[in-house]
Image (cartoon, rainbow, N blue to C red; front, side, top):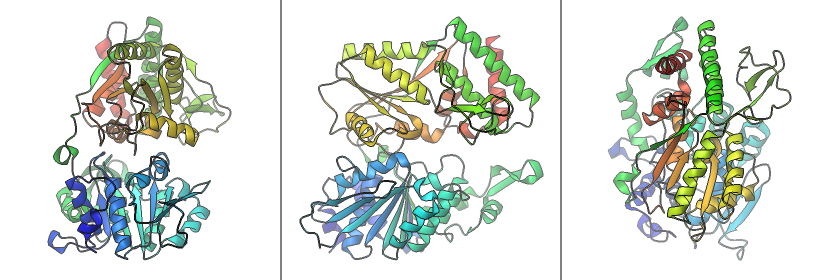
Length: 540
């Protein structure tokens, strides 16, 4: 059985780069390219280039060749269903019709289905077990899965930046699986989401021999420039070309523009929402208090500064507070984010008590989005729109307003904690092959739970009602619509709040940083202070 004949039986046609990707994954070593350590690979194709399909095809080839018996897939919680959904999951789409398989969803409620049918109960099947990083943090859950990891097991770690912290529980859990599995494939469209340090844990998960760094202290000595207090902070990087050359034989990355004939991504357009005088007054007071706090707390941590910055972003989104974003700190009765984040008032972690409901302070962005949607529907009554929000209260308010304003629209939501069938229904609305052609659709999602692993290419209009500071979430969310199935150029819009006279707000700082591909989530307290001072000085 040749690899070529195996690929001829794939259910869906492959792009040329995907055929090559399958061959690259199946090969244990490639000495001519410098790959001498076997079975440890990172597939880093750009989001939307079909990494999941390549993995599914390659795993089936290995099964037929007798090299593996089962596959364990670990993904972020929001992405788990992307693999296992019986109606529109990636496994259902790409498993071969004449190769029997069984899919197990390993979670609090275990689900199992057979492919293609249950007509032959005794037939040899390729077993897929799909779980998520968060679930494996529990030692008992991990222990129950470990017996399935053998020298005939392929371990797939989807969105591998979830294990970029080598000290985290989920890294340690996955590493225990890795030590038992014959092969490991990491999947990530943005393998370096923050800094080059992201590659330490990922390369260690593959094989410590690749970089020659089996411990953080070795990696730090080889590639980090140390400084700051007691020379214990990473202040720069060195020898990055050496790191790149060592990783190159084990990493495959292709851009969609180089290998797929997709419509273009248009440059993001800024939509300005003018704050009322009252909202602007509240914003200035909160901003100036934050600057004063930074002056009085020169040793404030980045987390503390970032927490306070979130308050400004909440206010421009039209609310303050919220069950999913903050809860009171009992020692000082101040407000702190759900943990672990410092209290805004005292800087301490405090004790979580009863939730604080969100308080509406304005509707400027909400009104702009309603007007924008009305204009879209005048041009196309079947318009499909994807709205991204940072905060759950913002999402709930926006979805409710759209339902009341446009009763003929189909409104879907994507957020944490929703029922599986509700999430599936929302995904169907913008999945290219299932989206209703004769209906207008709006799907509202939070960046934290909807920005990875989804195909929402039935839409070509993406609106960011508010932006997260994470560059990773921004890049991932942009490519949910720019992937296989997209037929139109994709338009992106950032809704940015301005003062009554056009004064800039924190929205400008965040959007500007993300467009310039800065990782704002790692900004120091002094960096936020400088940005806010510049904003205040320009207003004067």
